[in-house]
Length: 253
Image 1 (cartoon, rainbow, N blue to C red):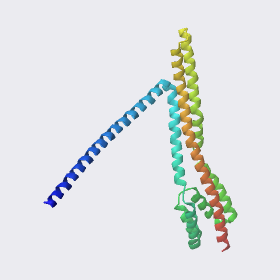
Image 2 (cartoon, rainbow, N blue to C red):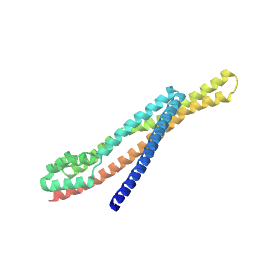
Image 3 (spheres, helix red, strand yellow):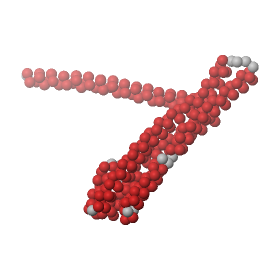
Image 4 (cartoon, helix red, strand yellow):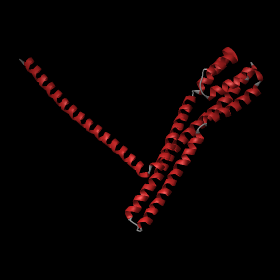
């Protein structure tokens, strides 16, 4: 009897726990659904507001600024991907080249460079390829090809800089044209209406805001790319010195 009573007590307790858990789960699910709905509503509202402001600014001036932003971002993302793929573990690569040079000679070291991506591997291959012509030729090849690799990494930066400068200028130009339109409306009305003046100025300033936003976004990407290039150039210079030391030691043997 006591055992049966104990079992019934445990079953009732478990049933109560499950019921409470189910109620909490239902409440949590309801809260989640509500939060998702509010988030979607806020996202749709924000999208609607941005579209409305874009149209208020006038597509004739807002569209060129938007194109500058989109094209500039495309170039920046392409550069970031290129630089990211060009970054390698320099210490590991140099160790592999040195090991191949000791065991298989110049051709084995060139094969290691050939199978590795990035500007450092390309510089090493050019230097090793001219080893038979002497260490002076190796040094000249490393310096010259280093400049070539730097130029390839900086490719596209001039376009990003152009869009950074062009976006706010287009915005200011749209603002000036909008202000001229506002004053023309005032002149035609023959009276300074606060509503007329405020509406015209608001529409005119939207193009400036769009241009500044585009320039700020592109400037952030530009600075990140420049810092990435500087890091790779420093790694290239340091690795080039290491290559000359390795070949000098190999030449003595």
